[in-house]
Length: 353
Image 1 (cartoon, rainbow, N blue to C red):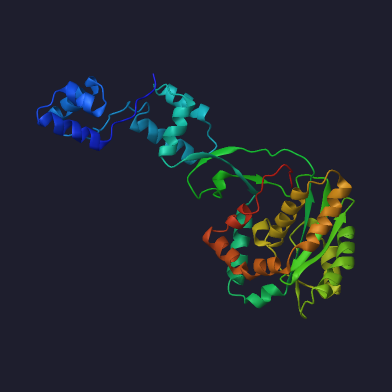
Image 2 (image 1 turned 135 degrees about the horizontal axis):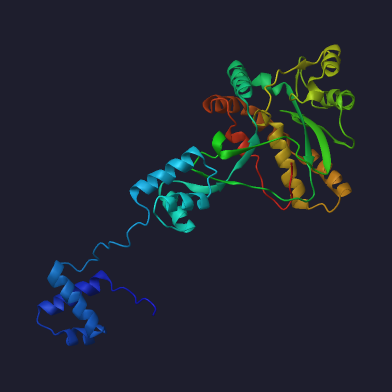
């Protein structure tokens, strides 16, 4: 049977007023268009409790005792990857039989909800310390110094794929705590590979790497594209080149080539994509490419080149302008991955590595 509409407070008070002036339950019901039983129930409630307001309802008792709540909360705090099935079994061994939805509701009341674990670079203690060192050493660098940096990187783009996730129990704003993330290795696969660079003045060159890249190929890419990009961007004298610590980049032959070309290279902490603003440009590019839905590799490459060239210089300028905030975030997060990587995560019908 469907639930009937609750009487308004004014109607309930009117029933009591009519009763007090001597009218019968039947007469009140006819006057207000209510059932006699409804009128009688309101009057009895008023006589017993001296009010017509809704009384507190006790509701069903919690299926999980306070002790049980503490136990499962402590369990997921220590290991956020604990499943609801694991918690159901833990409680059953303790003598409490519950369902998975009950587990979810209980943890939600404790401020915990099941979320997809963020995928972040694997950080070892040496990485964490190097990131902290970099952030502290450069925190007070003037904005002009960052504007004189050419940022570079490689990325891969796939046409199709699936996104594998894992869920963890966490509190709000704790998505980047190391216990709540899944370490990944950069470049997990894809159909085309790109190398690109940019500065605060705009995008530099973008090229497709058609073969497996090695040190010699990387040096050839720099030889053919880095200086032309610097000239096109009208970089000031003494500009600085940034690339990460990929083995191709840190090879002895590459370092020697950079030294002979008199390039200043920014010393870089490993496993720090959130410190490289070009990652934001890759995201911008991938969003634009996904919206155009290329159907084959040739179209994918063409669209990447077109959309890269369309990225406004103001976007590049703003990324570099706020660089100090990235350093502050690294320090505040004690060297671990910051929100700047979280902003790069995007789920679309495409999978981009």
